[in-house]
Length: 454
Image (cartoon, rainbow, N blue to C red; front, top):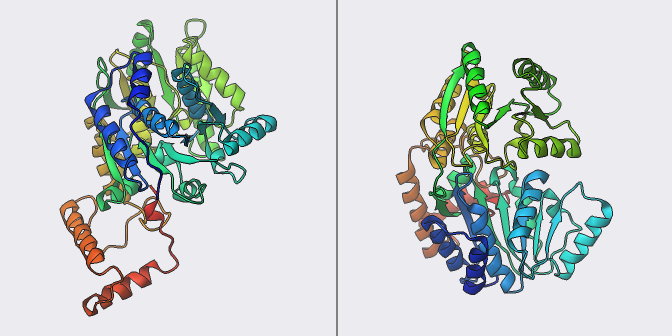
């Protein structure tokens, strides 16, 4: 069972008026989906898909209003401290005239601040708690957790979400998972029907589609010339390198070599350059990102730490170095860092001359479409959906015939057949279901039902 929330129409109306914000038709439809879930008394388990900048956070915040107005708490989870702090500042500003207590909880906060946050959460004084993985800690005990919003779902493990779901003893909170690109696991679960799906397929008025192009190292001089033209127009540029793990010295060398090369080609004082990577202290990262956000630097050389959590409307070009080394989800997320203003924006995928077959498919897909679901379809075919009943989030399922990327009608039919079988004979006790019962028992032994958790 889960708590029921009424539609707090007046509070949401005042919220939109104060923001001077008009919802798109897609956002209105999603809010109706959420409201229908909230009044059922059963746990909502919904995936909200929409491209970066389409207004998912506004929708989630309006859902939070329904929860808070009924006396329950909201946990808003983000994958990085930068993004958590950004959400905290934004949502706090949005509710500046409301009597809501909004708090931030991250791993790097001083001990005193953490202890105060724990007390507010446990006593129920904190209405909306925005945080990172710190929300999973045993010390965090909610008083009445009614709604969990998970931003950028592909950054969280399934077992981690299960921990948060079990924070309540007597009922399950509703769960809203938001992503700009469903990972293969999520897409597979959508096909199975374990996740209800809502889509925001409209961008705010004035936004233009991002133009994506592929260039090799031979074209670098032309690319740099184009960047200088954009900077001359007053725009800003991201240049991203694939530092996958901080321990990979070669990747770090790539980043520093690239930074030095860019400093030579874009010399001071005409150009100012920021650099951000995972080995920097948090305060140094924030200082560099702040300089870029304020327009004090024209170029940001970075690793994927800027994949989420950086919102600079003036940035019009994303250059991704060694683009063949990124997954489609990361490429789509990185591209979403630009295109946030009214100006035409560009994503330039830089690679060497030789590409693997999978690399060619990823680059071609990115150049062809901005559609998150189409990108996820290709990702599904390349990587597989993972183990739906386990915790592995990619790789092919052990199927002899079915292809999740191509056999959607067959899978839908099988799902309906399974549902009718369970409704008709829930314990599989009939003789004709003996083999099915044996197979399922064998498969399910020693498995936890992670498939029911977002």
